[in-house]
Image (cartoon, rainbow, N blue to C red; front, side):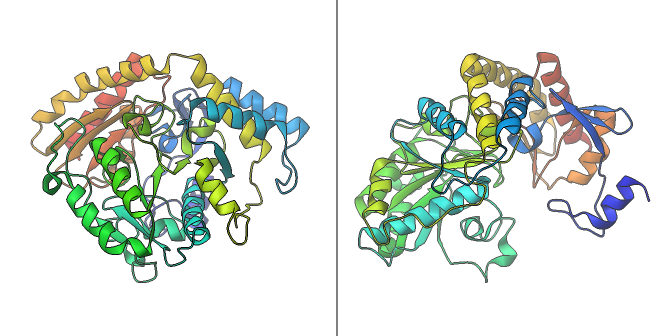
Length: 427
């Protein structure tokens, strides 16, 4: 049995039918922009390996940080103990995060970060004397992860988890913000979505702990870019009714949108901020949930006085070392200029897709490029063309998209755009 045959018989891949796994490549090595297959083929990783590998694969500074930490202390429990990697990473996070985010809870993964945020919100409301506030409001077409509570605030109809709808907690949904980031803001609440949001929260605030959403960019829910003024005014509505505000920036954090965080498009800040994916430059699983002093002190002053969460691998030193190295790399470069250059090039080179008959829209924000089709596209069919194109792309739903590593050269960006155009023509 070949390694690939073993894989297809025994190993379960994400969002895959085990009986029909589709084209799967055996990867032997990664470096920089490239994935090297077992036959020596090199593919440009146009996905940043699911949006996390912003500095490219196997970056020497990050791998060295992991190696050095491995020789000293691979792991130690965080209960009653601390260590320099966690402390130094915390200092680095405070340098770049929205100013009010002063408390840091380290997590294992992005989904866990969302679970932690939701638990924080419920425990805070309980501590403030509102035990009935245990549900959540969110917008449709959102996606917040695959764990149980996170699934409950993913879109219940069009999202990937709709078949679990009867088993999940029932949450409160409002239509996604209708005004796109490229459009002029309209102050009419009936047209900008805020009228519906106000009505939902006003009617249900006694049972809503928080309003959770992906700021500005909805990722897996359709790569939709909406106007940040919606968030500014949503903050005021939440404050009026005592509802907390949670921003899920797992996909958008650390420069991906052209700003350090999508929050930076706004004039307000959330109560809780979820970060992950690119936090370690994609080199090891890690995430964090950040919050303000008001939240942390509120939980601490309530019953039982401690936050009820503590992962075994919380603040893992290897992950902390990788994350600190990744943030240092980001801070040391003109990432803003780099991302703007990628955005400008993708805007120009994806523009021809607008003339294709099956294309519904083309849009770019920061280092995110999207060709939206009028029909669903097949990831399996795209994978089958990867060797021919020299580019690995994984479409989902109706979207052919890329989130290239920030190290992508103009030539590599051109190859990615050419691959996307090819898929738009043939799929």
